[in-house]
Length: 66
Image 1 (cartoon, one colour):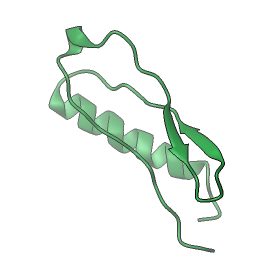
Image 2: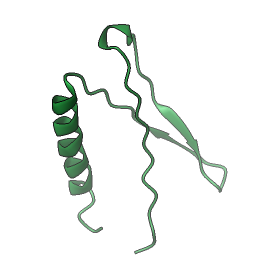
Image 3: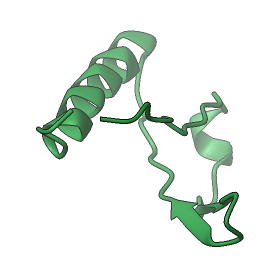
């Protein structure tokens, strides 16, 4: 299998300041566009870390071939 690129972004903001979160655009070398769905995790640092680890494990479960 070819090398892969995992695209992600993270930013911590005060919970009461986030009004909405949209998709992020990606431009591919062939000129096509793709989109990345942004995810929101809320809670204490420990809770966010635990949710992030679970989400990462679940993400790779979608791709058993890698």
